[in-house]
Length: 297
Image (tube, rainbow, N blue to C red; front, side, top):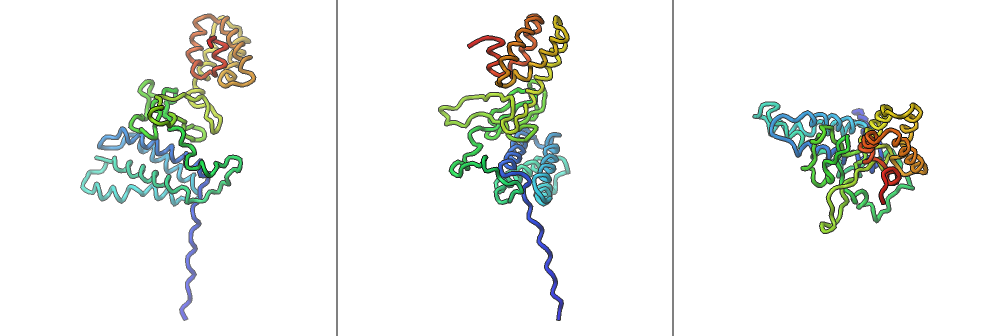
């Protein structure tokens, strides 16, 4: 009698290492960034940011799932089609379809994320009511800013053609998500055409992780450096002035105290110093701090 073979063990199905909401936000960010690159593609070799985007996708997928299967599927998604499409084309002459196929694969993954189980249990206190689930996160588009805070595109998801990899004003790299938690930056509010407005407010802090956005952190660092160089102040005054800066960014119980101290110390440094610090801090200060320091309604 022939010995029955033991069937091979089925591999463990891949699971998400993050919650479905976090995974969706991460994939959305990569899709938005990929759209920005695609909008500027020209026939020929891919620009440097495209392979960097591709490498980040691989790293993210390896960390996003418990198994490497999805990362491997993504890695090979463009190979077969590109070999057929470009079998008579010299390698590197036109690689734009590689980027397009990778972007299409990410869109496909985004559409089927719900079929994967997650190793992260949902927090009951943060659960979205069933009646609202299909609309969750859709009130705002995704904004694209450069690292210095210049607005590039207030609707990077719905109008990616206006997005750019780098800022035309300062040359800094652009982002569409928090660099700490990777949640998308809220952009223009999605309203009916008759109520739609252009632009969006530049947030100082991420509403998901609470960390300052890069432009906020850079403004704060520059203000500290300037405070240390101001003439007309004692070393104690400079230390006290630098110590007020964090409390000027958000409205807290200490904001009024910090703003009053900031205004008093700045008056000792002279008008030129006040204008320099104002230009650095005005866009990241809270409204309460601005009112105390600079006056107004």
